[in-house]
Amino acid sequence: MSDVRTGVGAAELSFEPSSRQNYWARVDLAGRAVVVFGGGGAALRHVGALLHAAASVTVISREAEATVDDLAGRGLLTWEQREFDEGDLEHVWLAIAATEVATVDGRIARACEQRRLWCIRESGGEHHVSGVGRVTLVGGGPGDPGLMTIAGLDALRAADVVVADRLAPLSVLAGLGPAVKIIDVGKVPFGKATPQERINRILIEHAQAGNAVVRFKGGDSFLFGRGGEELIACVAAGVPVSVIPGVTSAFAVPACAGIPVTHRGVTQGVTVVSGHVPPDDPASTVDYEALARCGTTLVFLMAVSTLPAIAEALLGYGMAPETAAVTIADGTLAQQRTVRGTLSTIAKDVAVAGLMPPAITVIGSVADFDPAAMPHRTSPDDPSTAAMIRPVGANSDITSR
Image 1 (tube, rainbow, N blue to C red):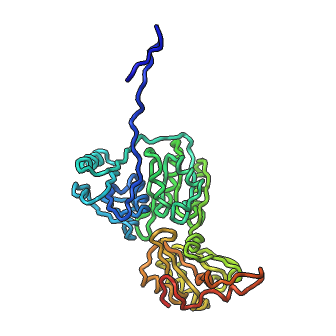
Image 2 (image 1 turned 90 degrees about the vertical axis):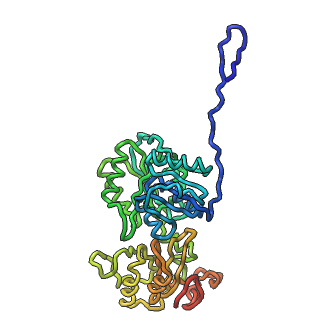
Image 3 (image 1 turned 30 degrees about the vertical axis):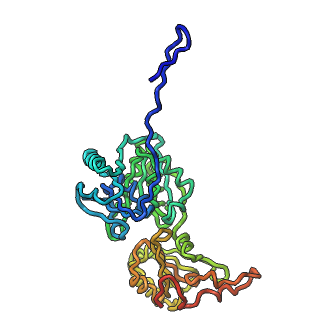
């Protein structure tokens, strides 16, 4: 510290050096091994960003929330169900200490220091409460973080608590402040799931405690996202609530596979259907006979396991077997896969290809869309486009016809 005096009797001034700042750097982790210790919300903050960076991720935790369980089941990361061992730090480029147990995270950080291995330790800093006490329902879009809305990102950055689903673009969580609490409420098909009633209580309780709460999910909250139920619950509890729509995967995923769900001269409409229950299930309220003859593009969400029954029902109600069909898994993400077929083959094609949820199936003429075969229109009434859809049997990404 230095003193500065400016004349007789002048007040003594002092200069304090600025506090030490961390050095920020971008690290290329593509293909490199990273180990994450912890399976809860603190770990989730990093897992999504690491996968988006194409790192080879291993999660080590005896227990894990639904999202880590789902990512492991889909083969996107490795989950070892056990406690930390110092041998885990061999042959890795980066370690994340996010067990949410201070003593364990401290041990991990010290072991990394001894090995001169970079370690990011979740600070577990004091949780910030803004005092606003409200809920914002944010649709995160189809998967790629670049397809989130600006309003959605702004809401996340202003949040005290983020209640996240497994299909939200989780990589954006890494950019939130360390005091933001992240709660994983993912729902895995036929696996771990947080009941909707419990999710509603989480939103309300944290908002009533004065937090700015963001309910963060994939796609659009109001298209098979139970956003309406959460809106009703917040209003009933007297909690201020607002909605930020998201880009729906029902249209964005086909688009990223080069498929317009409507196309002039081909189809004048699109019908979006939840396929989470088969047509003959008492819980199904869908009129498949009407779907088979409606003439619109059919877009099915949550229909991987039920696709055989759906195709059989549509065929049984008279839809042509040669009707084009396509299934897109992990749409907009680096691992996106597309399987093309016909109504009579698509269920088998998807099974043979080993596609897993999340996936979207499009049935109708546009499923064979080939922009290279499309003529330039000279008249707005020219119907010739309908004749230029790729013929059955043409080459495609993965085809079995």
